[in-house]
Length: 86
Image (cartoon, rainbow, N blue to C red; front, side):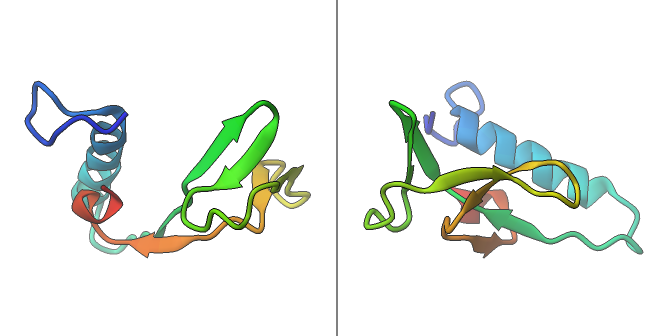
């Protein structure tokens, strides 16, 4: 998942973050983006917050506004680059 930052050894996390921020960098300047990061582990149908291990049994629910899956109570951090993600 993590790998290294070398192009031929980059892990999934760094590749995904790089792709997101490359897209943002190529977007027109009048468009603003906000990127939030949640790190959770789903194991045996239990969701654990990797930023705060005390939150060990989080609930997945559907947001009624946009019909997307959300994790209630997960810690979120704002990030501004792929380096901040890793």
